[in-house]
Image (tube, rainbow, N blue to C red; front, side):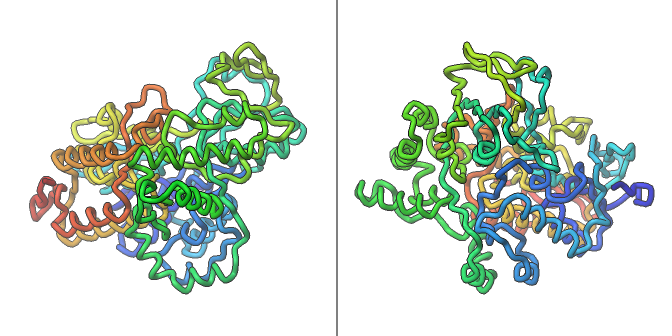
Length: 547
């Protein structure tokens, strides 16, 4: 839907994206009384949950924690059916919010933002859309998401396959029936780990091509318990406040002791307890799993032992075991019978480090010395994470500098909110913020609240422009890297580091210092007159470089 004919050509704010960030921005911008337009590439709301409809797609944050907190009535009335919500239900929630608060009239669907250029003469952004329209805006807010730019496989002959192909990040809305078909899936990341068990139940035969094995913990998803739901709803206000100040934005927090502080028997008992509970909270069993190599190896070896117990074929089990990077330094996965799936007669694992994929042919995949024939192919090859959606837009700041050039050696931001040389352009959960290392709903609300408060402040003081100072940006980038390299995370070739995209700079992109610590820094900077930002307007420049 596009109603650009009846929309103003000049507004206070343009918002790019109508996922959970974009929807909350609509709520906040209406409250500020600012004029705005929202452009969304898809035909509906929901962001990543609109696009990722692959079989088995499910949130790895508990349902009662993965929702908006800004309206107590919304919290009370919405009911989740499972402890970890499946994609269709999360999309239903996003649609419920859009309808309940009458947000759709503000959104122009099926509209890509192709370019955005800052005009220094007018201090306004010129935004070009796929509908052939150019819109002028004082502010541009990029609510484009961290995992919204699917990455196609870079394999010879990828266009030659004669059968249907599917990407987990661009799944057909009508679904896919694999009944009786020979299916190949390339990739074993988070999306694949969720999809493989479901596809295996349908397919006549499923072949999984794995480059890097992943650590995964059983999700232990169950129907929502009425008492559990009531407990949460009766304590939502207090628990939400606690979540805002934890490391990952979740209600449960990591233990206070090191894995080295207990006996091997006690350590095993605690790991068993966390395995039985399920989900990504396994990584909070001890307080040093992300920083202490010995503690991390104890956790990794525990999971390896579980895989060896579950997978009957010993050779397959060993191929499924990650051995060359610490547990949790790639996105820890939560699964529903993933490892058990390899005990099925109709499932085969191909390790492409042993049998490399040479090419894709019209009828299948050539790997090693074997040609695999397929009726359908699934690409679970992930995303150009954190920066992909931004860099696919032709963004130009001061002096015509493009964002692609500015970030040629890796993303550079101040707080993950702005980047120097690109005035009045905000990013929601951008690189340099906790984003993908956190409960995204908590991080989204914190960013949108901060940006909204900043816009209100600019309006009150009559400033036309806000811009990150280069010195503050340099200091923040150095801090983000310093904190990251105090952990084990950089030891993995992960998408956190951009390692899944050929030619992408190897930079640790999210801020690992913790949601609570990050919130405190953002609040302190705002309270100090937006230290590290320059505000220009009738009252002259304020703010100073971060020390």
